[in-house]
Length: 300
Ligand SMILES: [Zn+2]
Image (cartoon, rainbow, N blue to C red):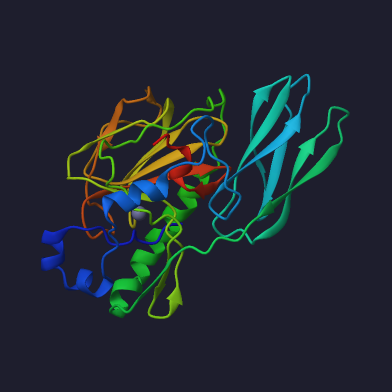
């Protein structure tokens, strides 16, 4: 699960915080950000990009009923999102950031009750790396904090296993915060603190002022809210079919588990709770329990 977000540009905070000075900034000019996130195709979402942290669209061909497909992740058979109709079905597969490049496969149940393997290729992608030297106490958790983190990690694993119907429509996600151009391209960033590799950054950071409303990018059901060690005030939405979205570091949570939201309905407000260096939204998009690049779901 997540390690802290990369530092977000926040001039006032930078001046106040010695830690920030040590960690450096990650901000790119807005023009470069927009270019980096422009999808290849404007017609179908999400965009396919068969790399770690990306998405594969795997055609299953026509069938009278929706095929059932799974991917093996660790020791779990994880159900996959299958969209389409009887003239042709497609698996939308999230590829974990930790996936090894090369050949991989999913299992598809056949109409006769058997199972076939469908192969796909993961191309390598070299995400940027950030090497930082920081005070050991900023990266080493106390035993109490570590125990809390481990409890929360187990709880989040339960949340992340949600797979529900109805399935989502194949459509673009709406930006959850109205700040075009202020999103960083830090998805996948590899962090090395004091020579030790940490988990890569698994979401999109969107810089915005504390209190900025955060809205649902697609219809969804609230499946978890809480205040977590790294992520601060957090909301998880379930959009169906294993497509989940996560919102972290909120200053306020406006929903509770079980609430159903329409696209554009408010779920909370941007803040700086949890382990952060300034107010921003950390937005995670998860498909089959794999965090994938939210930019692949955006129309602009
Ligand atoms: Zn982040």
